[in-house]
Length: 230
Ligand code: C5P
Image 1 (cartoon, rainbow, N blue to C red):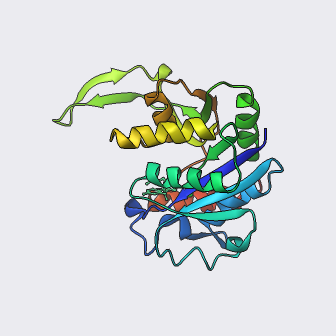
Image 2: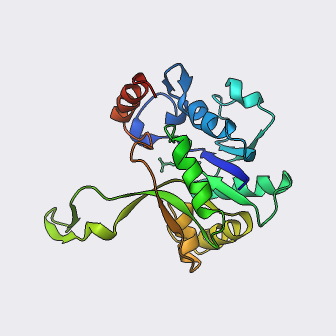
């Protein structure tokens, strides 16, 4: 299936506590955002990309990839969902249709394997809703009480961690995100907006090393991953 891509990249990366947003930190000679984009730019089914950026972002314009003709910019918003919605609106002016597939992928998730991207596209090509890459919970999970003590152990066999890319039809996703934002429900990924609209996104199992760079030690982990032959 051919697809459009939206990369929300307007976050400030507070938990990384670095001198710049985490998507602009350098690993293996390039910024994290460039590594992230490259995986998709190499895919023959890609139709076009919108990157949602913070206002006055000084880091994007100096990247080599910024001049790629397949990439447009959009103005990011206050929350991730605002940034994604702005990206979807921008895709419409690129000529994208409501029925077209759009993938949304975190700027800070640079280690997506081609096999995972392909499995997502193949698994969902005929799906009525769409879905997301996800990883089954590995650890034993505890629900905590306010006192910091275990209230109960959660049945992990039904728990998955939501990763990206997440893949939905452009029109349906735009509508779900806009409604969820208007209703002020907490939306931390695209699937939760679809769920809120009453739909059930499909879970497509992916690799656990498709990590979102969040804390300083994640950078070291990436460096180790990428020092092995791939
Ligand atoms: O903060 P978190 O790691 O969950 O952010 C996930 C992605 O959403 C990142 O790529 C970040 O840049 C993006 N984001 C955004 N606009 C915001 C907040 C986060 O584009 N207002």
